[in-house]
Length: 260
Image (cartoon, rainbow, N blue to C red):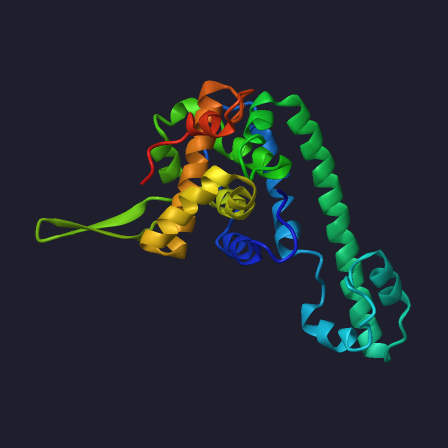
């Protein structure tokens, strides 16, 4: 899966606003130099090819024949439609931004394709439900060397997916997730949940079990952690998530902890 459209836009914009360029990862990996390149594909994807969203409503009133206003036919119409001078200038500026973002995404896609084709770890992470080429490259470059994490729980902590803890009167209270770790790993895993539960029956059953007991949001967080647990075992063992097996469910369960 590749993040695009409106999916994950709020998370990416929030991450960028907090200064996403600050590194949250340790060195020692041969992929260190690729982190900035792969991250560069996140912001235009997350914002999506929707320039001038605040002005779309007026244009859409006269462009009802286009199912996708930013598809090939829609763009051709936008580039030639007659508008009053100021509105035409604003639209041209938006279209220029669209072209720049599209070129940036295309360039990053090309670099990521070459990188994944040469990296066995990324190819293995691509077999994890919900993780396509881009997410696999992003997660592997951000994690670096998996040996520095002793367990999936350590990887959860690195991604900020562990609850905050407060002590009072000799008692411990668990609060919201800290979200203080690597925002890129966390964002990729969160975005991978939806395609994972759509296309993988075992993960869907796990999500539904938690949702019935605890609600939708806890079920999503639990599935995020489960996906990262699979990623951890895939990278640690150096093997694909799915093996050739007459029972795909058993092959997947090899990488999963007991249901929580």
